[in-house]
Image (cartoon, rainbow, N blue to C red):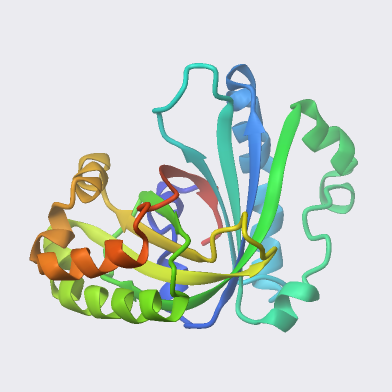
Length: 244
């Protein structure tokens, strides 16, 4: 994969609000990470590009969690499947099958590494920005606000206030989405992403610096009134491969 592919991750999401995307999470033993990434680049990414060119999908990416956490943790990877519409998503088909193009069954190609599936989660984009800058690192954020509508409105207001600071801070894109499926008390309904050019810029965001320096303190106060327990989970993901 060309390096530029990795740097354009999530830029696709600014093109159409209301896009649908799926996050498919899998854990891999760290010793198998190199083999897993090789297989994804050699086979899955090629097939994903063909599927995009045929209009079956809008985009596809593979991301991995950066260092940090418990030493016993397995390596976490997330496939991002993006679609222009619900119809495109449900009619995408099994584009990742390898037999026709490579002459090897998918069970053999992908079965070379033991995978530990976590789940598949579908979201609808509510709003997004793109600063036209290359982004390689993305913060994934989940939250369960006490009032979802109020949280979305406030996030809209907050993003409007920092939009003009994105280029200076090295922010490539920002967006928020709501969970489509599955739903329930154990599934946070609100999701945000924050994409940056460099790892230090990404860490600065987690310290409320960078693009967030221009946000008024009272806006943060309102936000944490709506999510008093804070974000339920935040992690930095790094692009591995994906479509053009």
